[in-house]
Length: 98
Image 1 (spheres, rainbow, N blue to C red):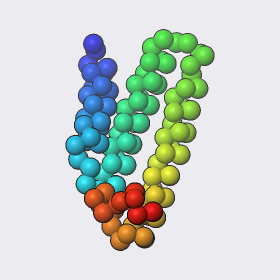
Image 2: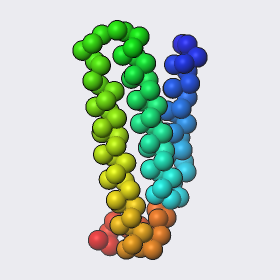
Image 3: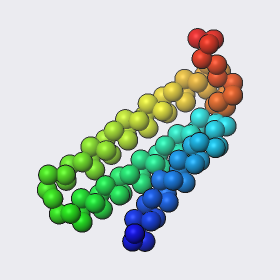
């Protein structure tokens, strides 16, 4: 495994661990998801450049578009949660109270 591949894998694993173990605020969960998507985008871009296959050249842009949609949806949910509950702490959310 090259150092570049190791750094992308480590960034993804660290973001995944942050999402799994540090779930106090919705904003921190969204930042961990963005870190995961950024590491996936960089790894997919590097893989496309290394293989020199033109069929997969649109895949990183498609992943980036889905990442932007995920970020905007997450921020909209963050604003809606902060307006209704007054905080973004995940412990104050209860799905059974809807």
